Image (cartoon, rainbow, N blue to C red; front, side, top):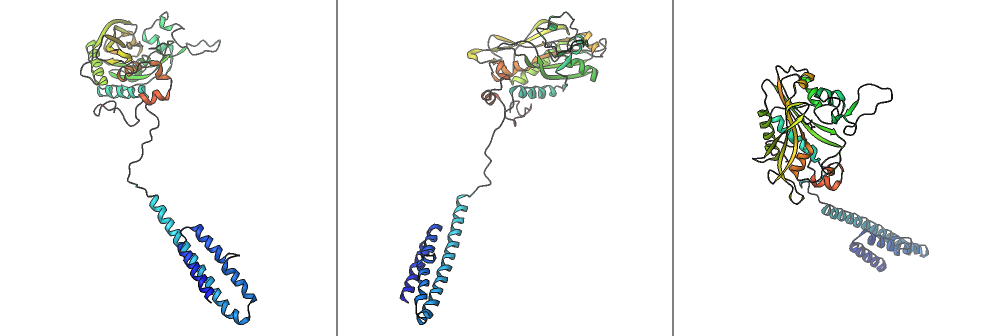
Length: 360
Ligand code: PHE
């Protein structure tokens, strides 16, 4: 029986020392596998005398059971240990802040539209809208632009296609946001104070012009509105928008069919080293057209020009975005280059707000 005691000692020892599942499996095969030591011993029982078998049989069976139980217990212990190990390794601090995964950015034009909407809202202006495909009446006639005016030429304005024989008056891609003046007056009557930001279209393309660009129209109609109110409103807007105490504006006498008198307004800036800076330098950048609303335009909007008067302006949004954020080339605004968008874009979370700072 010494042989059995040896086997027992050997395998229990090997089981105890097996430190990973494959090693344990090797021990099992060596002991209890088809050609395992204990299995072979059991096969020898057939060749024993009945007396010998009576003793060896139960002893071998008991050994087999004991080894089997020891294997199972060790396997369970190894699995527990492996689980513990994994739990330790995969420990997770759920209180850590999430990793930011920035996706898109807000385009500077959208950002600036939000900014100027916030500033003008603070001065009592609400936002009005009109269609981008506009009747030529709203875009031209109602604004006192005569049929022979150069802006109505085919090489300046995008006219919508009309089928042959369709003689209705043409539709155009609006060439400015001024037709929204007419729509707002028709909708709201006087008094009123609105801005109308949006896309406009002209056949023009160079470093400072693109066929589509953005304007914001401003219109204030009341009993005794004057050029002085216009000048104050624009200066106040520029100070808030550029977030500086002083900006210098230059009013130049000009002509628009829909305002009388009319003025174009430039802002002092510098272009040094390809960088645009506002409020300093010897350059001027034209940013808007403005004036007192022409009586005929008030009339077209359904407002009595003997009782009401107002000012209007049209401001280039892309221009002031370039100035404020030092963006040198207008064309890049509309190329959708991801590097440009990442560089000049804004976080979706920085919503412009007059009190918290405009650019977030
Ligand atoms: N509509 C003019 C333009 O596009 C700007 C303007 C608007 C001028 C309102 C005067 C009054 O150039």
